[in-house]
Image (tube, rainbow, N blue to C red; front, side):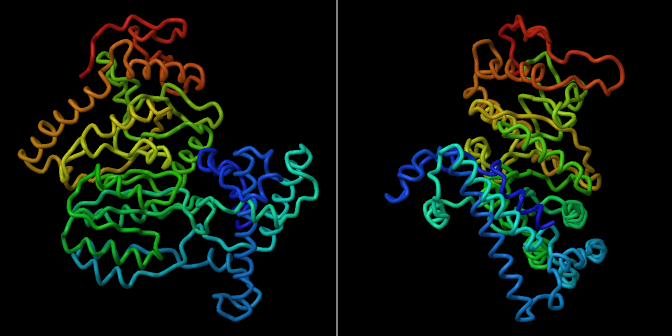
Length: 476
């Protein structure tokens, strides 16, 4: 397991060119000549390989020291990675009973403190694999005469390590769940158990605790009892737009998944593995919705099949997938670099404590405008049927969200993007969505009945040679 970890982390796919774009200007003088032929991408990839090797060697030394001084959990000579795999999993049965009986705090303190899954220690085999990857990378660049022959390894390390890749730090999660929580204590065990059940993907749970009820303190206790897997942020009813921006600033995963406390994803790793494969396969993919979608904002396309019908699938992974213009919260996953790169959700679209309606649509359009892509992958979640959503608790609250706040958000969105008329940004995005679906993806013929083109005639239907006859009609 550790071997696979280090081999995976040595892959160049974990670094971006823009992350290291300034390196050449800041190289020390003695480094500039030997590294002058290295491109920014080649420098970043070689740095990641060397950083991975150094990490594996450091962790192997730590294991050896712990065994030597008998500080490790296993007997001398045992493999700590095996100890970790055999550690007791987190038990939530007592927490479930405590929720029902209203005694969350005392039970949370008694929860087992098993070692978090997905955090293996390096072994000697992993170190050997990391060293081999480094030698192969250097040899390949030397053969291409990008690096001078017999360049000392020590000089390479000293010249390249002025900028590290944070994604290669130990225990860095690949996926960060971002949960907006407000007064649903009965949902805590269900959500934690489902999200923590996947051990094949390194994850963390960042929670914005937006309520001041006494039972919210259980999140602080869960932070300790899950060895830091739960990362709580305590707020004062700032609501979802500001909450997700705060959580994205704390999250460490390359993928962040926005969740709401009234719906629970399925347990296990199936959907998470599909999600990470889609992001890995499509480097320009900035967001993947998993609730409902819209191919475009045109008034005559009201989401065939309520925005869940899968007309296409990714031919490289076989996963049902549509490129779409707009998706809803939640779950809604973002590539963290894309989310932060476009400025996150627009906090000017709502007041603190008000619902974030339409902010999901707006950031999708902004992602497309910034050069990213948005897609949809279906996911069946379990909804909380015991209590309605917070925007429907009473008529006054419902009016503030679905009338007042909706009006403000729609006006902001319309002023910025000018609606779905020809020659506008949104119209061009709709045409790009149509082109990608018809050229990059394959038709999904697994559904009942004959495959039907999902694009309206005004946009050109499924004829790539046509731009359609779209008029000035707009959904806004």
